[in-house]
Amino acid sequence: MNNRLAKFKDLIPSTLPFVEGKLEGHKERKNYSIVGPGVAEDSKQFVKIAMPHSFNLGAVSALPKNGSGLHSHTTAEVFIIFSGEWRFYWGAEGRDETILSAGDIISMPTNMFRGFENSGNKEGLIFVVLGGDDPGIITWVPSVLEKAKETGMALLNDNSLIDLSKNEIPKDKSLLEPISSEEIKKFDNYKLNELEKFICKFSDRINFENKINENFNIVQILGQSFQDKKFNPVINHNTGFNLSILKAKKGKLENLKFLKPTIMFSQKGSWQIKIEDFIMELNSKDTISIPINSKVTIEINEQDESLLNCVTQI
Image 1 (cartoon, rainbow, N blue to C red):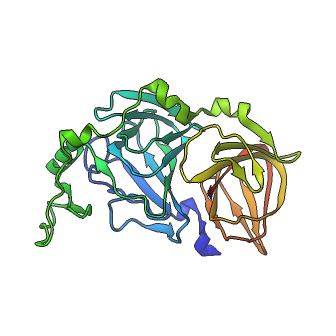
Image 2 (image 1 turned 135 degrees about the vertical axis):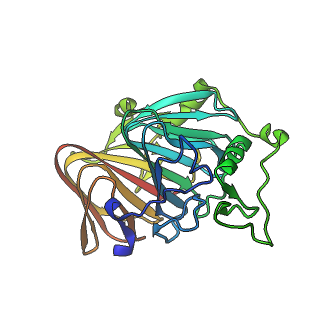
Image 3 (image 1 turned 45 degrees about the vertical axis):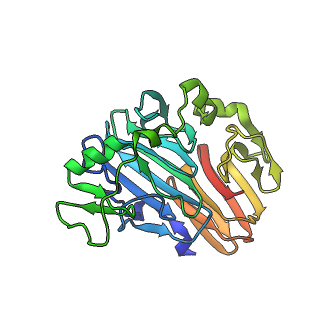
């Protein structure tokens, strides 16, 4: 069962996960691959839970004024703000933006350039769920690749990362060419009022809470299912997975059984998770992968409301 448990304190981050990792505004960040490899371009990125789940879970921490450059994905990318204040911006020139804080969630549309930075005054942390076992490659706006090359960093035509200050380009490979202005026009853009339907503010969650039992409430962020129960999601966006948030101070949920790949990670509180005869503590930022068809009990005993995120394949 230990190969399904990811204690955040035991994770090994990459400090140069992407091509823009040496640039000002991007170099003071750490990238964590918790479930699956994610989209990190660092071939040495440590992956804690490698077994396929049909989605990936990662995390990013960054100092103020640091984050990711403008890029796009071909699969879902859902950000869950754990701590700090973050500016998300989008479009080929990054002109539109919104500020999100702890507890807020944004599900980014595919085929759209997006970036983010820590806009607060201390280190912040976000968790990221990516769709698919293979979430594909990143497409960068040309200016990111051009500026990165000035620091010695580049991508090869197989999208692998190379430090040109230390390595020569292999004979059977070449540098990846930036996309053209015509290709950029094929990407979507959204005004803030159009993107707001993909955002769930922490302060709005109470309007979507449903009771599971006398002690547990649930907010269905994405998808419609938790176990055999159906709920209206806060965000109507086809990502390929359900995202449910359990909320409780004290109590149990017993005799749970998940028929598809499922993970749980604690946003707040220390949760006791029993899987068959295996009992473990899931503290804030820790993750567990639930074996299919296993009997599961979730228990919490805290003074304050605690939050447990649950992601399940649809």
